[in-house]
Image 1 (spheres, protein in one colour):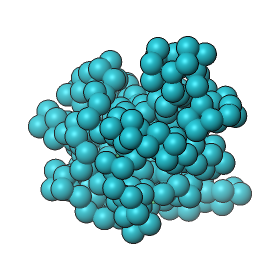
Image 2 (tube, helix red, strand yellow):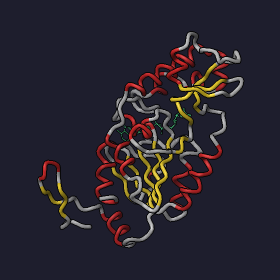
Image 3 (spheres, protein in one colour):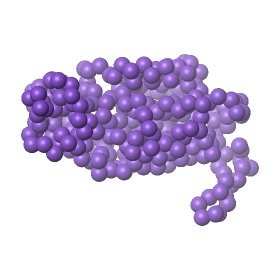
Image 4 (cartoon, helix red, strand yellow):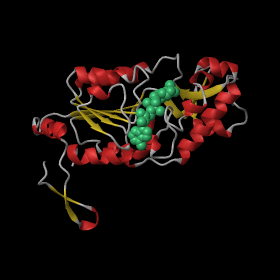
Amino acid sequence: MGAAAVGGGGGGERRAAEAPPAPLAGWLAGRPGGPLRVVVLSGAGLSAGSGLATFRGADGHWQRYRPEELATPQAFARRPEVVWEWYAARFRAAAAAEPNAGHREIARWEGRFTSLTVVTQNVDGLHQRAGTPDPLELHGSLVRARCAACGERLPMADAVARPGAPPRCACGGRLRPDVVWFGEALPIDALSRADHAARKADLFVVAGTSAQVFPAAGLIEVAARAGALVVEVNPEATPFSSLAGLRLAGPAEVELPRLGRWIAP
Ligand code: OAD
């Protein structure tokens, strides 16, 4: 590993590999062949390169709408049609989008480390479609619908094909997206597995999140305190940037493949 390393480029061309930045180079040199437990925490910025809107960016959802109007149980009780239609539109956009090079790079890391845990706040299903088999979806999934009354789950694709906004379950209850709304509990199993992985992480990669929503953002501090090298992939700084040993200040679809050339060549 280093500036002298030569990698094979596309089409058989050979080019000098870019040396890793100093914090990562020193860190990699300190653990030759040792266990490497990697955790990725992703947010909406990871899917920006697939054309999906973020929440807090210039064109983000929360620039146009207030979260309380769309992403709470109270909003669904007050205006079920509006809330359903908003999530149905987001589901259609996600279904029409393709995973980008950032999602694909994370999927490529499967089997390359002692362990890899992908934790996501995203509900768009793009990690799975890129090939990550079992991401911990802290905020649920827009790929599924759930009956607000009996809890029965079904594919969102089936739910949006039914009449009604929102459509009804066989039990008569309203269908809702199987996501976590503000004020609701996160899935306990996913959260405790994510917390455990953060405590054990050697390398904690934060990609495309503004790190403003807890408890997801708190995982960054958990990992940093436990001694992980935190790598933040985000064009913008965040409240947790000071914990990052390395900041890759560009789009995830560019910077994650770059990171991968250093940690999983
Ligand atoms: P945000 O919209 O808050 O933050 C997106 C982040 O991605 C910002 O920090 C951007 O700078 C960054 N970004 C934009 N384009 C990027 C790119 N191409 N590559 C890398 N980074 C990029 O989204 P989240 O942090 O995911 O929760 O938001 C967290 C939660 O807040 C969401 O899960 C959602 C929302 O309210 C619920 O609805 C419960």
